[in-house]
Amino acid sequence: MYPVLVRFIDICRLHCGPQHLPDSRFLLALTLLGYLSAGMMAAVTDLVSLFQALVISALNLTLLAVFLYLLLWINNLSSRFSRSLTAISGCSALIDLCSIPLLLWAQLATQGKLPGLLLSSVLLWTALLWQAVVVGHILRYALATLLPIAMSLSVLYTLISFNINRMLFANLN
Image (cartoon, rainbow, N blue to C red; front, side, top):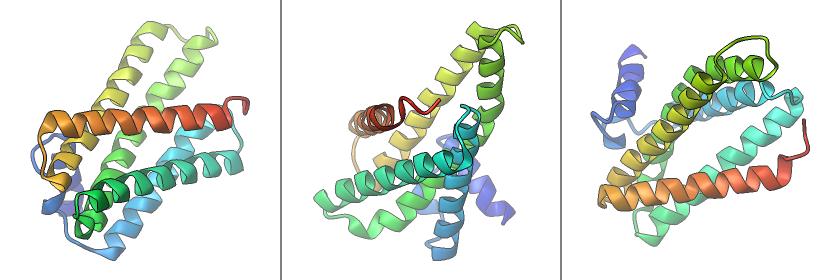
């Protein structure tokens, strides 16, 4: 399992693409579980209940899967769905897990319990930007397209996801 984790880290470092991952249903299930779990942990830091965190995380996973499938289907590349979803969900889970301490820091800094609100916010935005870059990198290989096109699609997905979450869950906390 360690070589697979290293492969995800290499994808996050933009050193390889989703085609370097094994095409495994078990690995896909594991990364989807990791994506849900990391998303739930991140949502719970925003003072929502565990059930609400599960709903938010499941919605984000559904949005990701539908967006990715539509992109691949439109380009007649549906056979790349499993490996691409594995790569995006696994890398996103890793980045989300690394962002949780930053989320906690920003939350405590907002409450005045810790210094460094500006620094924690900049680091959180950097993590969000890096996640968009990683998704764009994966889409570049999945869609066999140019990086600017893939990055535009990644930003589009991020904006769609953010706005849907904001519309549905703005009043939770």
